[in-house]
Image 1: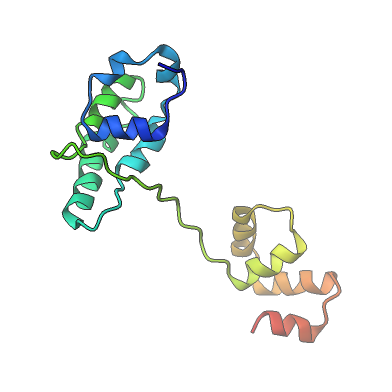
Image 2: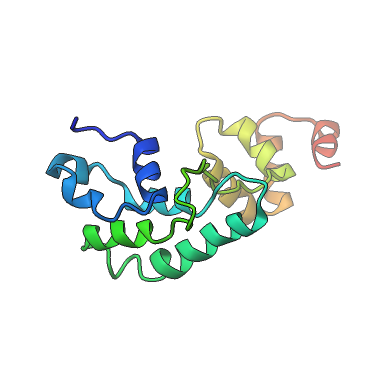
Length: 155
């Protein structure tokens, strides 16, 4: 076995309910398994079968996610819990990554982006929550915007 496991191989083994695979992995392969990320993958499956989608979400939450942090020092147990989240069909499924949704940028955030292009989106979002409209308008004036340009930005 190579020292690098592919994600598709890990998810395939878990879909087949292969609890014993953990014992077959090398120490290096075991270190490469990111259990926190597997939680996100195992809970989502792309299929038109709603019952199957619900099964993966509910099983992952019930068996794996519920006590993830208290069991994080027991990787073999985490592997086995993920393996029992599989479906009875033992069919390899397509698990897609569902990322965190980003908050939509508001007017103040878009204005602040112009003045602070090096800032991260979450920093700009926080700044827009902390600053009042008056604060942002004052900042626009400091950067040389005319009153008509400022009014257009806040329409």
